[in-house]
Image (cartoon, rainbow, N blue to C red; front, side, top):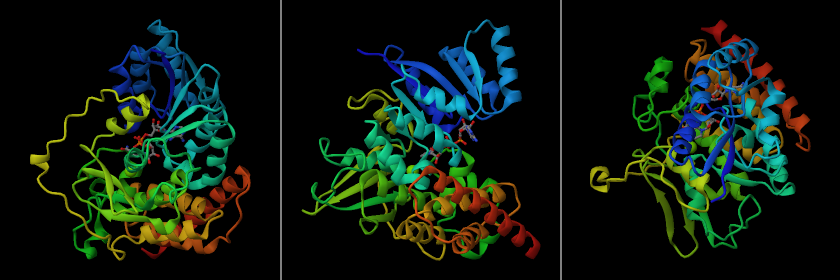
Length: 401
Ligand code: NAD
Ligand code: MG
């Protein structure tokens, strides 16, 4: 068996830790080359101790210095690098086969893109990278012969439900595969059934208490507003070359079906499993083989029933905002994503009420003229402008409160 050499970007996060959990189950199959984090150097130290990577990368300089000291003190010869250029380096170096892109938000775009441009096998959790720069990202995958495997549970499920030998990586023609629609399932998050009036008073802790999944704080809030599903509609569009009208969101509160593909003959193929990200991670790590993930078997008698409902547009306005941004094209999805990141951070900081997240995004989209996307610079400029306008919107809503 060939040993796969892996860089895990965002190793200290929810996806990063689940990835290392699966990797640890297969020491003969995987070798960790580099691990990265923003500033959580203590957790990164523990991971270095366990996996002995060649490099550990921290974005934060002070954290990098502390990790360096601690590794030296413990005679662990992992080299500590610091900064964005180092992230791009460990994502693209020769000798690295696979890159797990699990940084949260726009910060993950450049390293993930560097991996694609270096022709790596890219395991993409960082959906924001595709939302911002779908066309550029997919072009890079195509031009440099990279392999893109989706980690997001829905997209992983769709990937598993499409014909194995069908063309993927955005080059596929869904019609030629006989696909009628992609059915993207969503749990509906923690606020699916609370009275709409009560949404005005929900706290960050309530928003982060997802009923089925344990995730990072940003994606947990995205799940509560259902912007997560909006971002995933855009992600599915790019990953599977799916026209916007062929992607339908279906609320399925049990989170047992992770998504479905509907074919023209009336067949619907779904992927089911317990809600645990180690399943899609193991699928992508082992692809095309199946490997042990540590996830327990699905007990259908305990699940007992599967429910479905249409999303309520009044309760979840973010879904329509994402569809509109995808239809508008150009820089609109990058603006949507940036405004969402600012609004979610303000909500988590108790600076913005929950329902104002959607208004900040809507105002930011309306304030910025639509631009074309031909270069990464255009995407980054739209991202920067959107952050500026969204900050102003947050400040304005604070003044009103
Ligand atoms: P998290 O907040 O738990 O972890 C984020 C990781 O990124 C951490 O290692 C952190 O140190 C690092 N990081 C944060 N900001 C950074 C920056 N500016 N520069 C460099 N590194 C930085 O997030 P998560 O829940 O693991 O999510 C990671 C990505 O995976 C997100 O894009 C999310 O949408 C996607 N995703 C997560 C889940 C899940 O179950 N958690 C499911 C599907 C998709
Ligand atoms: Mg998902």
